[in-house]
Length: 338
Image (cartoon, rainbow, N blue to C red; front, side):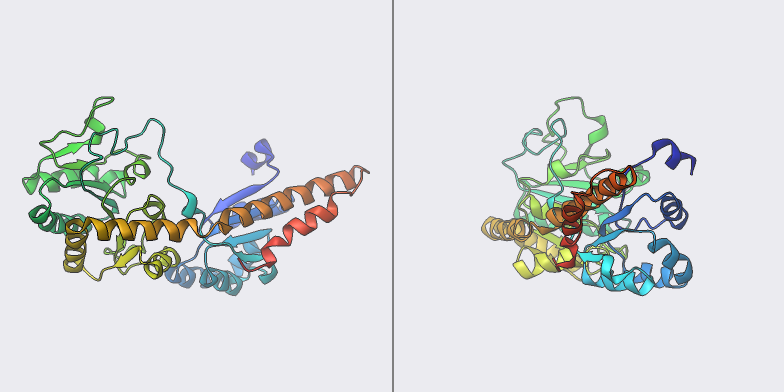
């Protein structure tokens, strides 16, 4: 409450699954509008929240709009008590994410743009073993290939380094790289033990495996590597990223594998056939670029809400309500099913 009073926001946006009942209640008590953007709710999360439906129904009543990634999430939120007329399916904002940092590493800056690179992104325990098994098969057909391993959680960086060491594999830790350093030829594996640098390493890679999908974690962002124009491989655990995975699979830009053996066979094929990989990468990018709706609709909702709040403030002060119609029309955008 003290933080809200000190900041005094005109509008609060919260993302994905950040449903905090007390926070939303405090906003509602102060008349501050809140909007969920790129919202999602997996089946396991829904099962947990449903036990406390009374609590969450009160919290959801304080949310002005719910801009969500999928029909499944929309249905689950309404079942928890969200007013159906405030829920709009926009798709995921992550489709447009992933631009490289101007100072961050890219394959070109690391001096390996001409080499075939596999990016293993957001991996969890057990998935590095599957990736390394696939890596062994890749080297048999593409000896010059490189591998980037980016563990999902920073507390696992040393654990993965120890795993690579026990396997007798030469690797390079990004955190130990001097400014402007290139990827050493005698260390074919890059352990990305830094934060915020993964997006820049997708462009130009041969393929990406997205973690949290072989391990039962529900999956991570499959659209980010797709936006970079590379094939995306993922496992069956897709609770939090199913819509994006299904879009890529339908477009021919993504492949779902059931286990480590299928992962190895799929990646081996992509590294043996650069034409296949390039074709899939183009399809993956097209699947992302072909949907420009999520950001546009979300921004319309935000702008309409701000306009309506400004109109109410002017009415309170005795001013004109000339912008009220515009505000109402803007907030009607979500009623169209994106």
